[in-house]
Length: 65
Image 1 (cartoon, rainbow, N blue to C red):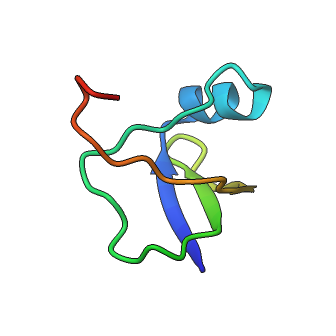
Image 2: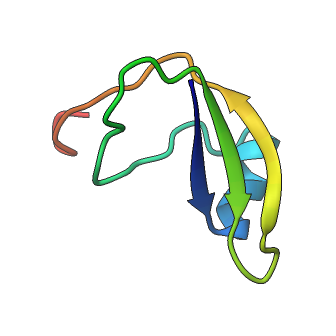
């Protein structure tokens, strides 16, 4: 299943350069079968900029991660 994530442009560039390997969110996806994330860069870019494959989703409190 594919999901759409809105991410600020500064972090999008870090994700695609490999500098940022994890994306932390307060809420986890409702479904467990997520395989692809479509990335939407927020304003001022305001468009879909790419996709990435999800190896796995980790869920825990920030202190434990």
